[in-house]
Image 1 (tube, rainbow, N blue to C red):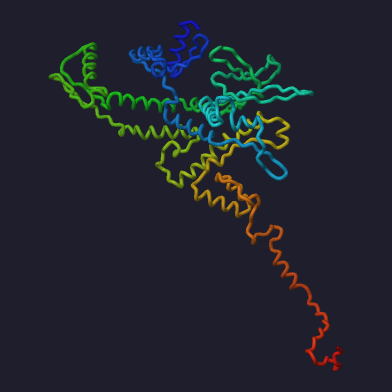
Image 2: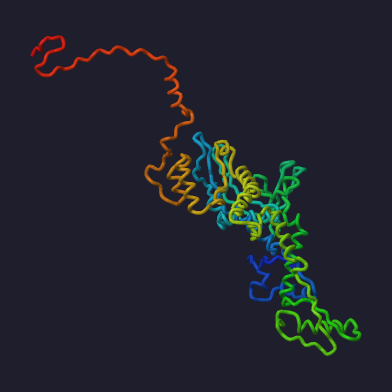
Length: 476
């Protein structure tokens, strides 16, 4: 890349609001923080562009993530998904049980790649999905050959930058498959392109998809709304820069040309505006008068409009008002219901999409037939206080739903002897035996009375020295 191309790239990066530049020097890749004036201790070219454009009255385009409501929604959605661990289960004749960990399942539960934990990995994937509309994960595989044939082994998982991925439908059969879908990834540093099939890429998209293949980001659909929220924040920033000084009108007698008017205005702004002039006395020449223009934010309902815009952006993401710190119409009980509504209305679709894609791309056909599957543990979203949790476990153990050791594991306690069996109240009977006692009593009442059988009279043993009933003496 020649110096002119590098200069143009940096200028475009600055204008888009990008804060990081990737510079390749002497075979090494170096990341430079250009948002703060350069990360190497010297004035970067981006800072020079910033000074030049601001001196001309131009401001760079604000990054959409700098809008607080938009950022909060991205943060809430990405962290919510990252909270839920992925479990590996198997359906058997005896029910569903946790399956033994394999090398492939360990990638999802312990380490997707050498540089990321599962929490950071899924947080980044969900962040890309919401911000760009699509998130792509490259499943790197290796062919393990056997005596007859072989099988593919998953080595690791890698996140691909969504702005570097292009989806291509091969209508001409250029990639050995007419009508197939391919993912073309362009390396931003080397310019090299890589082509991956659908089996090698996990693709997660937003619910805003008009073709079912690519998702549309919220920032594109609500561009005007997000830009309006950013403009309102710019307005507040300018007020802070001016020391919260309101506009004023300068009254004077006489006629001044345009040049003298600009000089006069600049002189008053030098002494009357800015944070450095807060509380200082403003000198006014003789014959002139400064009349403040008392324009209040409350008169224009600025904060009401800003709040309404924030609620619109949050609603587009499916985020509830209490999750963006709006508790005007919320209470403690209402917040709990909003959390449940957030799971049903928003996260349930996201979780279902992730599970379907993971189970299709990470499991073989044989594993799916044998009942193996992955599932997010959404119960972590509903963890309550200790008292409520204990009552739930007691009812589950007493109701023969959960074994005692299963409940102890949820409390991070060791197994106890005799805790691996279901317990039940002695008054509980199987459903098939319900009412058996009443049927037994009814049957007895309906049976005809039978005459008692004649019982032989038992001979009583006479007392010593006495006579038997027939009058004969006892023979000794």
